Image (cartoon, rainbow, N blue to C red; front, side, top):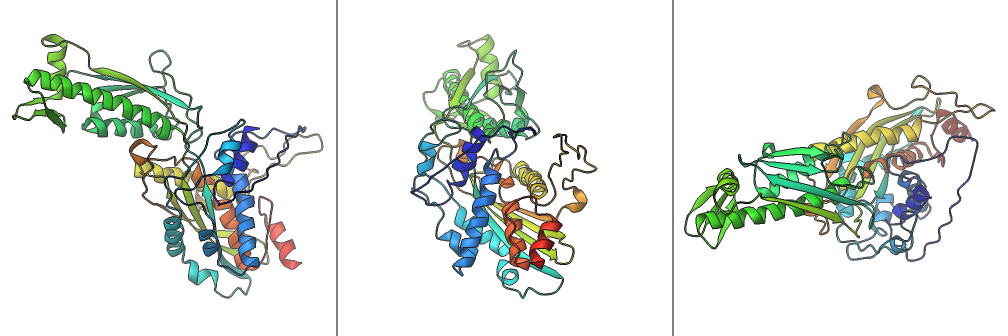
Length: 434
């Protein structure tokens, strides 16, 4: 139910559409159930929507990029479906506070070489084409996801950051430590992270739904700000001053006195105004601001064999302020092969009794290193008021665009429109010949 809700809610967030009708059916079968996967229903919805948008643009003789420029939601506009359809229950209102969709589209247009390839003659056995897709996602689940953290100061001026957020390989330990270091004005190595140990760390709903940076990161920022306030207060007491500021690991008074974080903590422990400088914070958000993305695909189709070669994927994302650019780029580069597999090669085969036949990676074909196209991942800087330092989610959105972009590129290359995935050579050849 929740996957189906996300399919409708996320895909219908993208375009200005006051009238929306959604029907969903849950069906029991004798085959494996569908469940959670990166994107959580959004990739399926955007495949249908973005192929439809392309078909409409072709029917109206409008450039697909220009058609989307005319219809995507703008800053200041609300998203009616978000309030009606949450994730398995009634949701919360969404007003778009930040969007870089125009810049995503125009950046991708240039990087893929859209104007040259889209209009080039399509003839011969090997035909080249480009396609694109606009997509959105959310930043956590509004009104459900909650993150908690605890920060304490040590005598050497370092800090222990304890948090329930779990680093599943996403790099969240690093990203959240960066947020704490930024607030406290210390080097990253001064933040010592302990995460997801239920004996000692605070509660966190979980590392899912593109929520960790947006939700848990906001909790880190709150706790770090409280610790920073205590450091300043204690430092001024020790300096005998009433006003001052924090700068690069020191408290400086207005009359020129200066004391280091380490001295503040040590004297607070043993000699003056004794106390432990520490703070806890929790964060829950009733906002789930959508990140936006434009994905472009450059493909070559062999019209005799139906084989599709993906030459290049350009993925341009508005995820607000990127906390760690290298890890964000890694999220994009990890999502693209997942979507390309869904687009071109991955499907289960069952026998008459419902048993899966292709049960290993020898005959269930995922995209591997030798299959991968050139990838260009770019980010458009925007500022999301509800996110920590202006950040939005980045983990799931890059999986939503490649499949419809490839499908639209195949149509541009050879005129074949395939509406179901994966787009196999057999489907292309049969439709091309007909």
